[in-house]
Length: 63
Image (cartoon, rainbow, N blue to C red; front, side):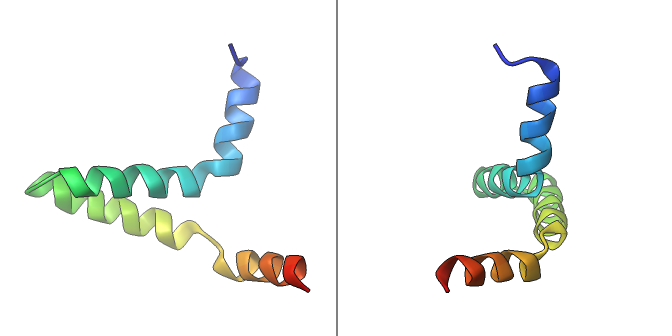
C-alpha cells in the first residue's frame, strides 16, 4: 500500500490530466444539472493544463 506522501506526489504530477479523464468519463454518463456541472469541471481542468510547455516538451523529444 502506498504511503500518504507518495500518493500525494502521484496526485500532484497527474492532477490536471487525471481530473480531465475522470470528468470526461463522468460527462458521458451523466444528464441534467449534473452534466452541466461536469462540463464546468472538465473545462476548468482543461484550462489548467499549460499546453505551451507540453508542446515544447514534445518538440524537444522529437528533435
